[in-house]
Every structure is written in structure tokens, then in C-alpha cells.
Image (cartoon, rainbow, N blue to C red):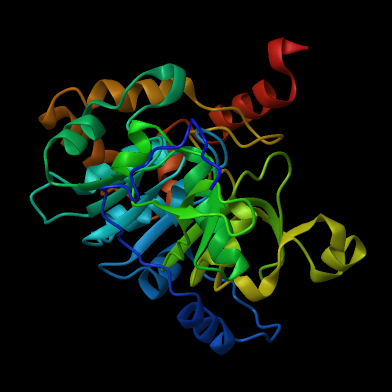
Length: 340
């Protein structure tokens, strides 16, 4: 049998598997989803009430500080959902917001986290509150690489229980993951088996969508095309609703098809305060205000009372943060960097 010097002899990682793969069960679920062209437009509040349940496994789309569905994540916190599992795949401000649902005296929003990238806000530094939550012992954690977690969505989208890879093999991350070792039947090489992950609910922010859920993303989509096909329920938020005739005019631009989607919410600037490629730049001043407020619990609670719990919808939050004048500044920063 051929051995490989970079692959550990350990047969499995020691981390918990929060969602065991069940491709046949997933296929049965997806067969029951309507394939009809039905109007799915609703408010964010309605979508979260209807499709996000306590104890769900929740996966957000986007990539790092780009194109996250901030409006949905605010609403999940505002509705005080409980005991969610979370896919921490390139998570930044989205994880930071969700951690606000822990340590507020009203239960525990996050209970289990598959962690690839959490707590950090990239070059902006670490979220003090997310770090407190992650270090509190209140979360059950399992570690993955960013690539491995993306492969979990890919396997679920393919309808298979796992995919083989060399990724993570021989690393500490492998030992803290829930991956297992398999032997390739063709070569005898030891490989990491990355289990499929089918979230109960996902939310993805896109540039354009029609009322049925056909969605367009400009720029990098990272794992979102797989996530859309892996999730049992999917909320789409979009910068703009467009007619189905426009979708049909150039169907090659559609990256998420309508039959994956359960709700469509039109939320202009719905990724604020992070970046929406080709639409608006991140609000670095407001992100710094989040980080500063989190340093101590009391200022953090006052900040949340004003910006999350003190508003009824995302549009009010945008007004608190400077309204259209500030948003237009961020649009200029994105479209004309350096003032050109």
C-alpha cells in the first residue's frame, strides 16, 4: 500500500460533528420543496419568523467583510432566536453581531460553532465581545479550515456524504475537526474525508433577484453557489428586485436558481456596514464604533439597545448610521476609490 509522508496515521479528528451527513434524507426534503414559480417576496421580519427556528443550524453567505446579509442577522438577534448552530466560514461582522445574542441575560443565541474564521474582523482586529463569547466555554466548537468548510457545502450540494481531500491532513486543525481518514480505492493513498453539511437555514445577500428567487451575484461568490444548494431553507436578500423578464434576457447571470429559494427580501444597502462589491464600500467608522463599544459590557448593551433592539427594521438602522448621505459617500468610495 502506498503511504504519503504528509498524512497523519490518525484515523479521525476529535471534534464534534454537529450535523451528520444524511444525503438521502436531504434528497427527500428537497423533493418536497415546491418547484413552482411562486412570488416569494416578503419582509426580513417575516422571513426570519417563518424560516429561522430555535435549534437550527444557520449558515450565512458572503466572504469575510464582503456581501453579508446584515439585515437578516440583525433580525435574528432582535427576535432572540435560541441555541443556533453556526457555520463560521470566513465569518467576520456576521459572527460579531450574532454573539450579541449571547451574554444578554436572555438565553443563548449561539450554542455550537463550526469554526474556520471567526472573532477576527480582518485588518480591523478582533471583536472583544465575540472573543469573550468564544472563550467563555458557553460555545461548543469544532475546527475546520476555510477550504474544508467550503467542501462540506460542496459535498451536500453534490448529494454525497463526504468528499476526499488532502486538506488539513497532518495538521492540528485536522485533529480538532470531525474529519475522518479514508483509503483511496484506486491508489491506496490516505485522504481526509470531509463530511457533507446541509444547514437548516442559510441567508445570502445578492446584487439582484426576481420575485421567484433567481439571483445574481457580481464579483466573487466563494461558496455561496454550493451553500444555496446545500441549505434546506434559503433566505435571499437583494439590493434590487428586478423583473423576471430581465432574468430571462440573460440567464447566464443567474447563479442561484429560484427552486433553491424560500424567501426574497429587497433590502437596499442590506450588507452595510461591510462592503458590497460594485455597490458601496465598508463603513470603517461604524465598524470601529462596534469594536469600541464592545470593550466593556455596559457600553456594548447601550450600543445594541440603540442600533439593534431600538429599531424595528433595517432601514431605521441605516438612518441612525448617517442615512442616505453617508450611504452615498460609501457608494462613491466603492465606485471611485481615491476620489477619481
